[in-house]
Structure formats: C-alpha cells, structure tokens
Image (cartoon, rainbow, N blue to C red; front, top):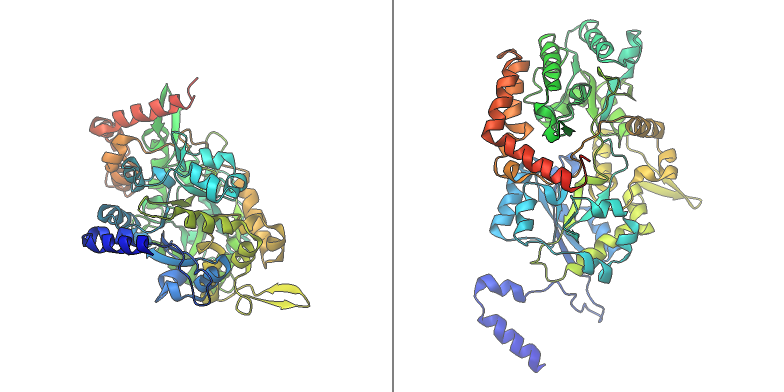
Length: 517
C-alpha cells in the first residue's frame, strides 16, 4: 500500500507530457474480482472498404464487439483513411502519439515506417514472441520471418500475415461479352487487342450506345500493369542485368510497352481516364454501370466481383483468364512476397505492454477465430440447422460490403479463408475462386529485388520511383503529347538526378544477399 502511494505521488509530480507514462493497459480488477480484459489500441487503414469507411463509429460495430468477446481483448480501432494513409502515418510518427500496434503496408521497408525503425521506434520482437506468444513462430513459416518486410539484421520487428498466392493480380474479363461476340479467350498481346477492339465496336452490352470501356484501371496504373508485364517491365519490379540491379521502368523494353499503351490510348482500347481514376471511379465503371470489358484485380474474391458486376448488369458473367503473353512467350504480374503486403504489425516502444498485442494476434490461429472470420455472426451471416452451419452468402451490394468486414478487414493475421477447402466448396461460385487461384499460381514474372528495402536515395527522393518522374513522362508519351523517344531523355535525366546512386545501392543490396554470382 505504501509503495502504491509513493508511486501515485511521483506520477502527480510529473509534467503533463510524461504523466501518460504512468498510465497502463494492465488489466484492472472488474466487478466480482475478475481481471478486466487488456486494452489493445490498433491503427490500421480502411483499405477503401465501403462498409468500414461508412461506419459512424467502428468501435461500436457488431463485428468489433464480437471480436472483443471472442478474443477476450478490449480491442480499440483507430482508422486511417486509405487515400490519406501515408500522410496520416507520417503525422502519427512525427507527433509521437502512437497506438499499441500499427498495421503497416509493405512492412518495415515502407517509406513511412523505415525511418521510424531507424529511430528505434519499434520493439525487437524475438524474445517477446518466445516468451508471450511462442506458437506464432511455429504457425508462421520461416520464409515470412526472414523477409525484409518483417526482419532486419536478424531481428524481428513485425508480425506478418501470409498471402494465399504470391501472384496477386490476375485478369478479369466479361465472359458474357466474349460469348455474345463469338470470341475465343485471348492469349497473346495481339489477340487481347483484337478482343478489346470488338468490345469497343460491337456493342456487347447491347444498349445501342458506344459506351463500353474495353480495359480500365486506376491512376498510376494501379491494377493495370498487365500489358507492361507482357514485356517483362512490371512497374514495381527490378531486373539484374549487366551486373546491375535496375528498376524495370528504365529498361529498354519499356519503350515497346509504352508504344503499345500509346496505341491503346489512341484507339480508345484503354480507359482514357486511367491517369485520374480513383478506386471509387474504377468501381463505378466496372460494377455500378458494368461498362468495362476487362480489368485486373486480386484472385482472392472473384465470386464477390461476380455478384457486384451483376448488380450493374444482371446478364453479366465474369471469368479469370491467363495474362497476355509477350514477345518472350511469358506473361503475368510480379511474383510477390510470401508476406501479405497489406498486413504486417509493428509494436511501438511506447506500448508498455507489448505482450497484450502478441497474445491477441496469437488468438487468430484459434478455431474460434477462424470460424468467426470465415462465417461472421450467427443469425446475421449464418444459421445452424440440425447441427450444420448454413452460410448466407450475400447477393446485394450492401451485404457484399458487410461481408468484407469479417472475411477480409478483421483478418489481421492467420490462415486465409482461401486455404480452407470446405469453406470454398461451400460458397456459391466457389469454383470461381478455385479457378482464379489456379490462374494466379500458373503465371508470373520474377522480381529480382523481392523484399528489398527501399534504397536510401529513393527514400530521400521519392520522385525517382515509378509514381514520380516516370508516370509524368509515361502519361505524356501515352497521350501523344511527347514522342516515344522522350523516354531516352527521361532515363538520362533520372540517372543524373540520383538514379545512378539508387541503382548502386540496390546492386549492393542484391550482391549482399548472394545474388549476381
């Protein structure tokens, strides 16, 4: 009692900025003598999910309440709007007002997190995991723990989620449009272009208007790189050649890829608003108005896409097909990290009880967690009939959006539903998921810089990344404002402005990993 009194006096004497350190999320006794559940405050992106972004108070959501109940953890969520993610995270680090854990995109290598890591902002988790959540090291494979997105210099700084497939972008196409026009599934780039021309010219939606958009994507060619990949220049990839590790967007093959996109733009085979499309614009065109013939997205939920596109056009039928084959006879998006780039968790040192976060994340590997994440809430999302679970698969848009809450958003780590065969077999259009995963696992381009931390010069000069100077030049070339030869001038300028140093730093990293031998 005397010790507690002295502690209280010391805390009362502290200035306001330090007083918070005397607080604790240590469980307090609840009425009846039982310890109250520990509080864990988490910051994470909204991921552009409509259900999450429309929530008036995410912490009063029925799924979050159920998460608290099942995990026996007082989880409190701090949402970061996806479109403001980078800015908000940087402000959070600058202010030093950090939650108990942060869900970081692209792990500890991201431009927001890497500087904070260098400033010793996060716990080295090796011994903490061994002490408080040892099963994490057995449930999560060594490849994930060894990833540069998770560990640095042998120290673990993040808890990773695993991907169902390492090729995370595949082609979606309107099968009903192909069938109506009597077209075969395209394979080569030229065959793809012929299909897109037919989508443009032959009124596949049957409304008598030339309003079809053959191919669409988002700004910065987000979910729209598939024709660059045909030329082996996926925008975020790197290639080791001529004793250097160089970014794809400066390689000579990029000229041919840009020439192709210039032609597609001029022929209106490509959405002419692709440089402006926000996610909501893209979704409106593909789903709400169902005017897009082909697009690219993750292989995780084609059944969701099928229902959403059908809401815009009841006759719509979608399918996933192999990516266009390029001049070298190959195709497909980059084969990525085993770590899910959308979900790795770091724990700031300001958290006095990191063990609470670790124990909470360890819970995700329990049967109770997986049942909740797969099937949601009894009564709302499923019923039990004669001892058998009957899932109410959503069909209307509002229910589809709500399903993402438990199926995707709250699945912080742990097994994905895509690896649960019973779950997939029980879903309406589960065969679409199986097919999508088969396509994803059958193709893809190698990235020689897989899991490479962002080179220091690229951190300090982000304009040297492909969303900076390259996209400015590419937009001018594709829209016809500059000739294709201006690409050579861009490359020279890029190298002079720091690109040569970026290449040297990347090459040094690559050789340190044992590459180039």
